Length: 235
Image (cartoon, rainbow, N blue to C red; front, side, top):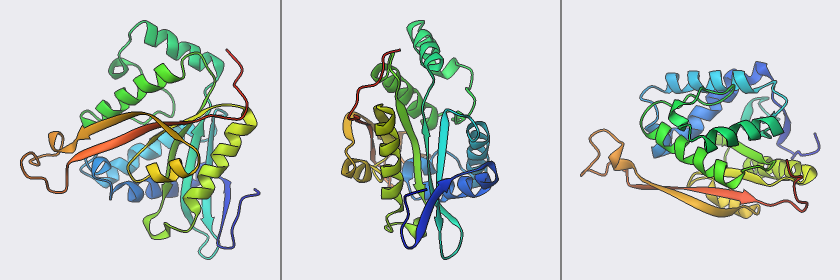
């Protein structure tokens, strides 16, 4: 691939990479108070991520790119993008029009199995946002970008966002993402604009945290988009 630095390189991820990708996903999330509430046990979190990746990698509508540190040969960061097919968008829009609740829909292949509580609440809001903003149009969803904490601030996240942006421009499609407070500055730097926000008081979801902050408080996610230079073709 053409994106590289003296210290790392980008390459397509394979199914053999799934265990390492799942590990990086989990360790990158644990410092985030919201993600820390998703699962009591990091191993359960890692297992659900593994199952999600097993449903995604190899699907032609998904693209997974890993960052490999040249010194260690280890995967230190990765990202994924989903470009739904015409039929997938139509089916989703039809379900939304029929007012089928996200909490009662069948789990799609490669979809993260959100546990009840905060994860399901956030996912339902995300689904409603995407249905509204991408109704009837082709688009790319930047699903995740994660960097192992010890390898942050080395340009790996920047390289992954740039890769996705070039992919979107080549296809002439808008790209959407949900940004955590940690990821928000990175996406803003690369041309994403906030179109909607979700603010959650984590004390309402954290056990025994109400009235005792314990580091919890208001958590703000941003729903963001980046427009391409070319308009997408209508469905």
